Image (cartoon, rainbow, N blue to C red):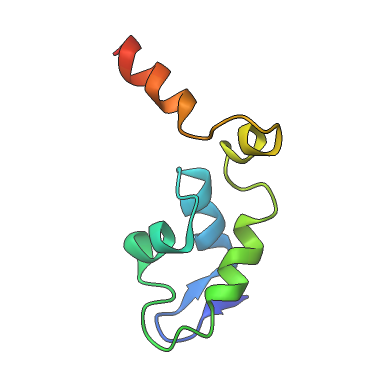
Length: 77
C-alpha cells in the first residue's frame, strides 16, 4: 500500500528505512522523500514509526534518555 502518493513510497519501504535506523518522519524523508511534498502522508509515517519500528523506542519507553545509548556506542568505537 502506498504511504506517499507524491513519490510512490510504500509502507514496506518506510518500514525498511525504519528497520535501517530511521526513527523520525524527517529521517524517513531524508531516505526516500516521503512527506516532503504535500505532507499528507506524515501522519501515516508517524503511525508506522509508532509501531515500534525504532529500536531506540524501547529505551525511551523505559524512561531512559534515548541518546544515552548512542554515547556509549561512540565511546566504544
